[in-house]
Length: 182
Image 1: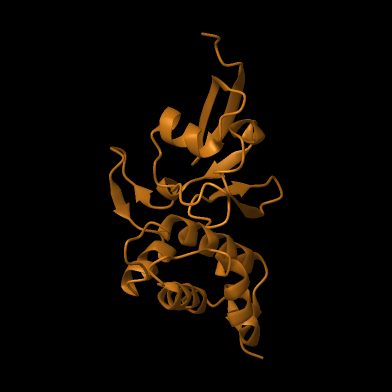
Image 2: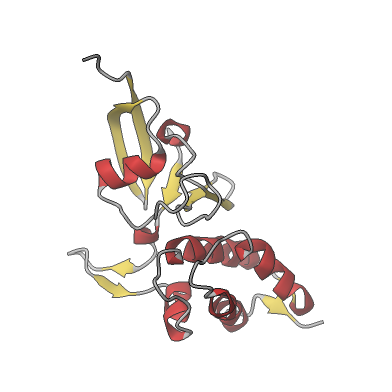
């Protein structure tokens, strides 16, 4: 049987340099995270990039970030790049144990913004990208609902937990003072 062609991959995941690692040329990033890194928080939902349960955060050199659907994006696209997975959000101690959730995760729990939680990693990452954008450039309070809809609107929750996801995201933004009156 012929071996799969491989290429070297190096990237940063949750602040940790990874690689170089030889991985198959056509390996999807979700498979790299699950099979090579043991990071299984990003979920394979539809496998077509529609549901967005798989998204991770891609950090750019200019301080901005964006969601990336990793069920349809090859691992090698991320060569030399920095990403954050759902596992990278909480604060951990030296032993790796979680000592505190980030504000978005905590608000999602406070608002019981999930049922089965399969889609939760994608929603947390989407809300994180939105909050980080608003920390750089706050918006008027009247624009908040539209911004939340734009950030979360393409994510699919089969349990129909949308209202709570939106409420939790709104609560984080308001608590951090990122939507200004006037």
